[in-house]
Image 1: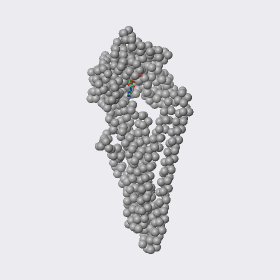
Image 2: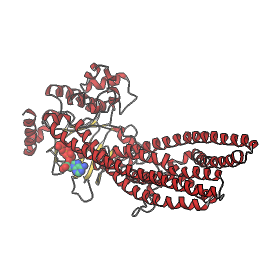
Image 3: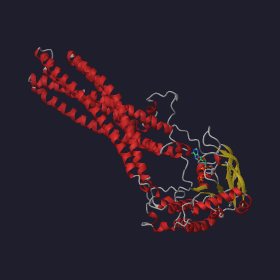
Image 4: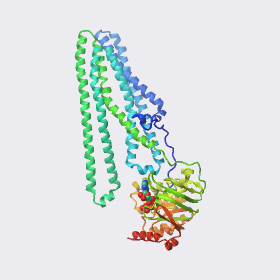
Amino acid sequence: MPSEHPVQAPSIAAPSNRTTPRRSQNLWRLRPYLRPHKWRLVTMFTTAILGVGVSLTVPLVTRAIIDGPVTRREIDLLLPLGLLALGLSISEVLLVWVRRWAQSRTVSDLEANLRNDLYIRLQALPMEFHSRWQSGQLLSRVTADLSTIRRFMGFGLLFLVINILQLVVVTFLLLRLYWPLGVVVLVAAAPIIIVSLKFEKKYLAISRRVQDQQGDLATRIEESAVGFRVIKAFGRREHVKKQFDDGAVKLYETSVDKVRLASRFWTFLEVIPNLTLVIVLLLGALAVGRHSITLGTLVAFITLMLSLIWPVESLGTILAMAQEAMTSADRISEILDTESTITDGPDELVDPRGHLVFENVSFRFGPDSADVLHDINLDLAPGTTLALVGATGSGKTTLTSLVPRLYDVTGGRITIDGHDVRDLTLKSLRSAVASAFDDPTLFSMSARENITLGRPDATDAEVQQALEIAQATFANELPWGLETRVGEQGMSLSGGQRQRLALARAVLARPAVLVLDDTLSALDVHTEALVEEALRNVLAATTGIVVAHRASTVMLADQVALLEGGTITHVGTHQELLATVPAYRTLLAAEEEEVHA
Ligand SMILES: Nc1ncnc2c1ncn2[C@@H]1O[C@H](COP(=O)(O)OP(=O)(O)OP(=O)(O)O)[C@@H](O)[C@H]1O
């Protein structure tokens, strides 16, 4: 099915040192996603820094009011100072508003673009990649990991910079206002910073455990939803429920540990500033009594000191967030850095006739594994149909997967109309070759969308014709006709109905080469006969490879190839092979017995 159009993978730079990447390297590599938002980022940081400046000026204005109009009765200063304080407060609110506006647009765009690129990359990666990775792992990277990065980029990074800036500036101001009290605050800050850093490490480890356990639980839920029929049929509800319970209890306990750790940390953070406040108040009152500082300075000092609490408290959490974002960036880079081995060739296949040739083709799944196929030589003239017969596991599916380049041959070559399939653009190759598999995947969309996946521009008449050929006109009788959304994985349809819709999809694509991989296996004998009759017309106009287990399917083909021990041992008509090849006779007889059993 020509559904997989060649797509451009995102162009982020590869890590410069692949053997020992620094923890932050993969996060840093995501910076191209921020580049289009340069001005918003400048706005974000400028308004945030101005905001800090304004919030730190307010206590100094308060000091001027207390020392001037309040203490020295300089009433004429009250109005300008009051207006200044009001202006500062209003501008602080405006600055926060502008910052939030710039921030929300930037991070939403970052997440959306990154997710888009990740999805495109996943679509472009070959079958070999998808058979190695669990779908749950991919899902968690595209959802949870991206959200972690968004949270850090949008919130953590900004406040990391702002909080450190605020810490430095306020400490400087406190030391300038009255250095002995400034030293007291510095001494009090030291244990907070040490404990924060320790907390960050522990919190990161426990957060990771929670994330992993959430993933495990989600996998259990997904598996029991998808496999509910098997669970019910085998009466394993209690067993599955117990597995779920175990996972849920484990997650609950780890989450409680996480909350306990956080509450111990927050309590500690509450106690130290409060103790420091008491000490500063006592020493400050003595200093005011001795006229070492004014009352206004003490008020400004305390206000500024209190403004330090949040930046100090949040430092541990923000650093933990940074760690999580780095790990997420590593996990995402594992996908973005995977090279796509199956890429476009330079040639377009114009008006394909469907002359399909296998020349000494061999294939193995990995460099260290044995050949699954070897010395395959086949020549299918345009319009001819070949039935592929072989024992289970003999490599029939693998052989058919090589034609649309779901895998690439590891030896020899496959040509269509004289072009090596590797020299063709994937779009033109996959428009020329359509496949219907034994496991017919239907997507969560309308029946029409599922059928027209390979040819979205097909007319109603063409759709109806394909449905008739595939004996799938039942789709018109669905509650909303072809607009009916077929359930997740097409589960609201029977196996045979799904196969017939998948067949209609392949037929509608009007391919030059049609690959039917055991597509008729879920049909009852009566429907199979009807579909075969219709297919005979389709196959007359196209080059076909039909993986066949039954004599009735073999009859659709002009020739039969017997696949044994990874190679084609015999090619001939059904009658010839029946008469001359005992292994073929045995194989078809066994399959027939299986079917009728
Ligand atoms: N992704 C994979 N990685 C490694 N080996 C694989 C992979 N897919 C299939 N194989 C192996 O390749 C061989 C051929 O498998 P294939 O699915 O092509 O057989 P088949 O003839 O279509 O079988 P069946 O009739 O049961 O569908 C088998 O031994 C199988 O275990």
